[in-house]
Image (cartoon, rainbow, N blue to C red; front, side, top):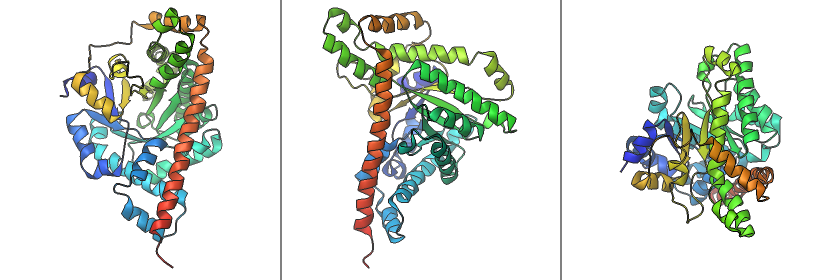
Length: 371
């Protein structure tokens, strides 16, 4: 069952699970995925926590205790989510130790309502790192304009970061620049660079969803021929940018000081269009020193029928650029699409967080001891 997953791992792609819940932790399911499905990391986001906590499995006792203490709903959510991340980090600790800190990591996101506030994002990142208190945590910071200086500051304090919600090549280059700036700050402060890790989460499927919609509206044969091409082209050109930045003189100076490369992470790899093969964003994004974080359905599909045939990224750059150029010629604005996707991404996570606040508040009231 896991031959394809093993081949993927052997090609240098770290398999992370894009999901977490208390039931997954306590049932032994997460341990099983690590042991049997080559899973070496976990990512979370506000939508994942909203689904897990609203589902109720395993949270009643902690919610009862929090209600008895009369904590605020914000504090309750942070106590619940950081407990899950801490427990998952402990389960993954052997992987972390075996890979010298590269994998075995669990990500937790800053409050999405802070996405456009640099100072508050830095403060929240420090608080989350303190609350979880595990070396194999990654603090997720969105790649908004306000997020970029926050990334540099947080890395500069020695806190490892998962940069999330990256859609555009220009923004991805700015993210890598922020990472290098942060490492330079950390080096100047005398910190051990070998202990700082980062991934840059480049979102994939949502690009096809938005661009395909625009191609369908055009309805021409040229437009139809480009369906399902944009997301892969965008991600492959991101990897080209990664290769350029992490072979630069600026990087080599940091590498000599012990720094780790910021790996590209393919996020949003569940296929949204049933017309496409369900392992599209796994099979066709195989490259060394990358991460693919998958929802469980994609993980299972890859294990069952994934076609891992070696590197499917390097050597594709000219074709990828030609495909994005062809979209521009049809009047599909790349800049407009990626900005829309970033705005929508922040809004969706904020809405999930607000939904989580409401449902948790209702549970705290329900479980509150009678006066």
